[in-house]
Length: 96
Image (cartoon, rainbow, N blue to C red):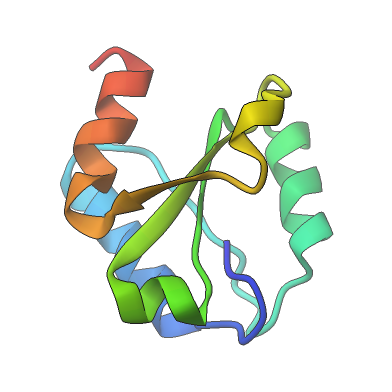
């Protein structure tokens, strides 16, 4: 998911990284999808985690990972992780 400017190329790069690591992933194909629409899709499709990026995160090499299947208030808009920690963290959360 992207906040603000659609960052479609970066969203695709992240998806490719996840696919290559053996994780299922998808992203909105719209150039600038609405955040609420993406959250609603996660809910409908029971997607457990969202990787959220914005311009600042991309520039800092950070992604935010948000638990979608339960409401964890302490996560707020997602917990920040270095981009290099994204796949190990998701695999840990998924028990892989």
